[in-house]
Image (cartoon, rainbow, N blue to C red; front, side, top):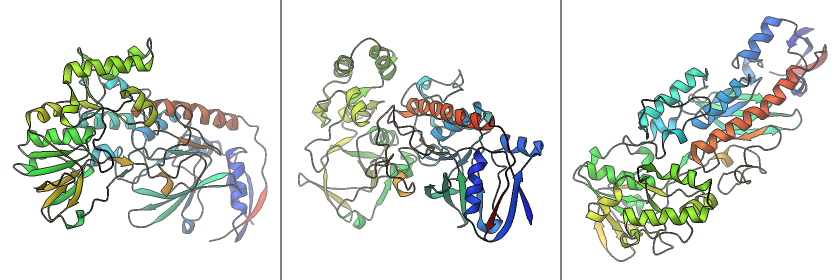
Length: 463
């Protein structure tokens, strides 16, 4: 009879049941009284009990966090502050892979830095009000080092499912070389975010186009398009800013601001700053004193005064105000940083929706045909949670968002948590991270204080 030692009763009580499900060699388990081992496992999330190597399974003492973007880092930092270790799984080879690998060079935070900082650490004082892409990445890397967050990189989670028979989550991942791993844990934190996968629309004839077609996730700089005619599809913040970048590099951009269903794509364009203050910050202050519709009215009046009537350029506004629309649908208004001036001057041409893409040209719904050298799809991103999380109650299978809206969508059943799906940017993610850490720590501390007792159990283990 072999002896396998485990930690005192609590989290590992469920592990005994998990082992019991396995068949093979007989073992006897007894409580581990080695304080050194207990202390190491309590403070080192990567020191975990594991099955034999041929099964490639690990037992995680704390939560498993899927995603090492800003949301996942915030959750891990808040958990560590509460004394709870975690394991962060990341499919890429770096933290914040969307920012590091899939954003254009000229990108800056669209909101002031005080609205984008993660819990427990502010931006450096010498950073500008709107930090650059590289400055934000530097902030995140410093954040990870400060809170000793060391993700397990190149682990693409293919399936996560709650095993009711043992009361734990099984998280199955695949490495870059095809190696499989299963993490078993009490708590699962979904932090893959709202921008996990690029949205690539199906446009008739796009496969025939002989020029370059790419999503903004692959676009870096307009320097490669000097002197070229480029069609940008999508008039959100990314589409507007890519057009501006192309203009600054002497390209000739055109912008599709209408879709096939409506005559005009309805979009709110607001100035990034109003009277020397950020539009977002001013809105937040006004909302403390006035109702949302009144604040929306004020924003629209100021936008008309600063930007003029955007409808003249095909940018019709929705009937619902910008803040109310954001609150209802999560659709973010465009914060203008110079693109509208280029539209007014004719440097950015406005086009109707696309009817068909040809070998070298694009035919629009108004019958006009125009040649282009490249097409850039500024068509956004989507959640990919339904593809790997095998759970039907918390997440919608249609859009991959929590069914319950903010602020109630952060917690599900059986130890399932969600961070970064609030449609409220980093502010919403930070709020979720704090709630999650507080909730998990209550259970963690309660189990740590549970009176230990000798556990003797026999089970069968199968290779």
